[in-house]
Length: 283
Image 1: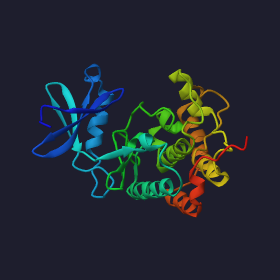
Image 2: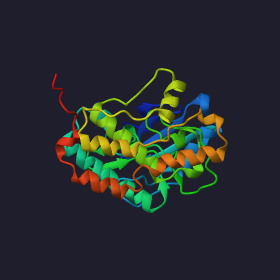
Image 3: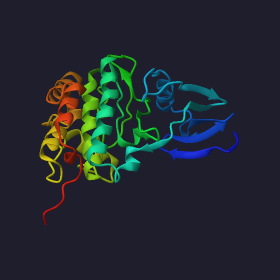
Image 4: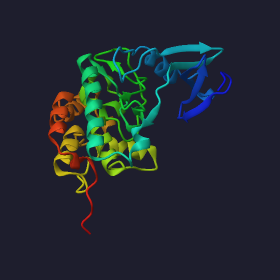
């Protein structure tokens, strides 16, 4: 493959991702779509991703942002493998359990360094061809208490209520714990607990609707998911509250989740491999 023959790896709402090769080395080139090239929020995501470089296997390094004639790009090393979203039907039992435990090691490392990923979902977790788990896409990530953060972007289905409502100053590890719970639910059942074709309605479900328990998930794992994904049940629409009152309510929901990824990992380790697959229906 020549440097003039990029391969499209994927296309999202705001950018397109390519695989390119130069001098025998493969790398990923991510480009903001033309219709968003002047959108400061999207540009900020690209700029932000360059700020998170790690000297740890499974986390990004050598990520570079640049602008060229009004176009915005990210360049980063290519990791061969497939995302958990792509592998969902294949992963279950002991293999899925070990992948989750390896992902938790990465999340514990981020927690120890006061970093919240803010975009944990199956498509951002890669199982490399080397058998290692990689956590990708730190464009929405933040360091604890960073006052410069002001995003209104989030992942439908996986983001915690405090992220959706853009209450970034109270976002912390427990926001990522919420997303991990949703990831587990999706990996076991192949679907989210709720969805809606209308993004606005879907968002409201994420903010206010409690995660329903499923008998198709192992009882103990289901309890773990429910605790990961605990949220405050609003008496009024969130936009009816002043910021301080809104934060207090969101915080009350966050306090009922696991308080650290180490706590989640300890419980996951105690579960049998059979817990990490969908239970067969008796009818």
